[in-house]
Image (cartoon, rainbow, N blue to C red; front, side):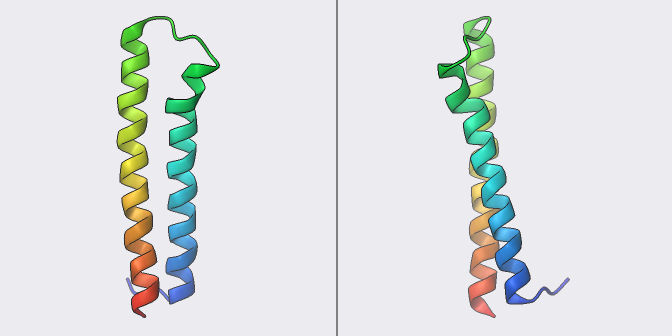
Length: 69
């Protein structure tokens, strides 16, 4: 599916916002809410970092597509 440059830009912004939300939820929140055990803390950190990296990569690819058009 071919999108207009503005559509790629909006999609990149949404993906970037999702990446920010995952980072805040999984990496920053454990500093304010004490996790029940260390295993849950590690799962939260690793999982949220994976999702953050994934959505950041998607945002960068979409932003690159917007600039190519």
